[in-house]
Image 1: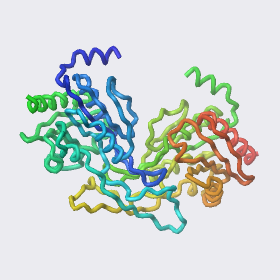
Image 2: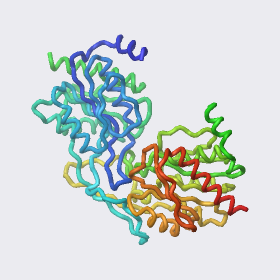
Image 3: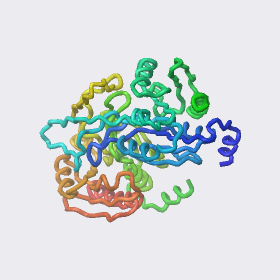
Image 4: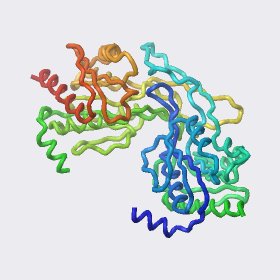
Length: 229
Length: 229
């Protein structure tokens, strides 16, 4: 606690007066009462960003999928499981927010039907097939609102980082996309980020997620302050 | 450590001389480099049983799916992700084991194909479908071997506990099945167990997973010692 207080004290208050809403972690999309689809996101990057934003003076709300991480000091946390629950929690918390950072690895699809009881092998050797429904796009939904805060999206890709990030930025209608190599960094303690905005692309080289989160908050604060000036 | 040493010291050594192989946790079946199918098993029951068996004097090997739990003192741990990896780790560790306790919530099916790159939304609004392949039945595979140790299976069910446990016992060809209400107990710190063997059914009433694990080890030791006598 003393360490946290010291770090917070010496962090420039670049987000003073800002209210920041952050999503983090994977979602869990139920197949039946026991099984579900999830992804390898550990939530570490999102939790580090929440902590960095709080240290920079913001009032931070963190909507978290199922992860095993402690809540950063001074951050309000709301736990959810599915993409639909995350969407509802984000929209409920949205009024008054000035910055939205969507780091969560939200499932694009959920099973079209969630079975009431555990799906059993029937001994015939035939295997089930699973049909999907598309989940709502939380970031695009928020960005399209008339009262939208400044929106930052994340893209976890296994290839063609810049290309996918630029396409995602256009598709979601947000000013800034932060791309990283998902499969290589999920669960790891360090990462490297590629910031893609209207000006072009800028890399934050490999570092601990804590250090990267502080740098990213500086980058976001500069853009946010320019917009609000 | 002192506490652990004291508890171990005062635990009757009912499994002295036994070599116990235990599986625990869920498996993770990859859909693509980012996504996968898993289940709500936390691994707590299996880890508690590994600890209880070690305290009872056994030499314990624990094959664990992806969980966030510390390794019990004195237990050898092997981490795996998928059902196929768990099967391979179990078969490699099997020679010389006298008791096999399969608590892991192994996926019945895995995606028939694991995509090389992350599956993307193509903007058409059409959703993917997923076909499955049946996973190997690790417990039945072990039980069918000529050198099979005494085998204990677990059944996590959402309904009809006794009926499903009896059917599973016959299907897997094992002397003892331990049933519990999966969706109600996954991730919880307590549980209740129903032991189903050739004699009938016996309930271990709701208690902490640590207490239940010690009782279960007593029950298993009695059956194992009777068989070896």
